[in-house]
Amino acid sequence: MNKEKRFEVTDHPISTESVIQKVTRRECGAITTFIGTVREFTDGKRTLRLEYQAYKDMAEKMLEQIDKEVQEKWPNAMSAITHRTGTLEISDAAVVIAVSSPHRKTAYEANEYIIERIKQIVPIWKKEYWDDGSAWIGDQLEKTPYPEGNPPKGANDD
Image 1: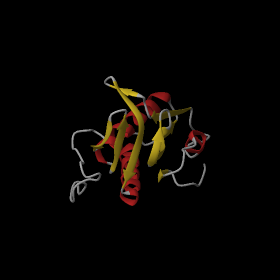
Image 2: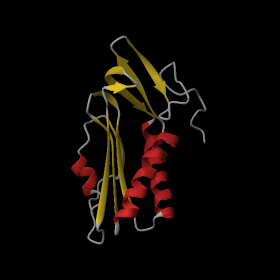
Image 3: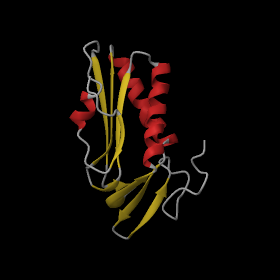
Image 4: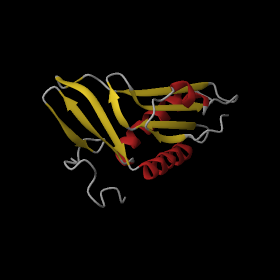
């Protein structure tokens, strides 16, 4: 197993292979990988690029917390998560999640669980740039707007 940090927020492009290597184990028969990318169109509106910002230390702690949740639900699963910040162009990878387990069903389920939990609890937010303007979108569930560009004080005190 690779000794690199398994839960990381970075402003550099993500190497999917590097994330996969962090969970590769001889006892596992499956590794699932989810790559969240920047799409060009959302509800018919053209996106030019995205900007992600995060409370990096807190975000990495929350990624570790998600891994602990995964360990409770699927004890044989191992995960690695890297989320990017900064300006991303269309098709750039914003997040890469890799999960290994002895069997594929666990790897699929745990991987889907992780991306949903990232959107729920990790303090990462984005700004969308369109043909006709830009706006901070808010939390990753897009339920809480951050018009000033970051969460209001106390928003991530769960």
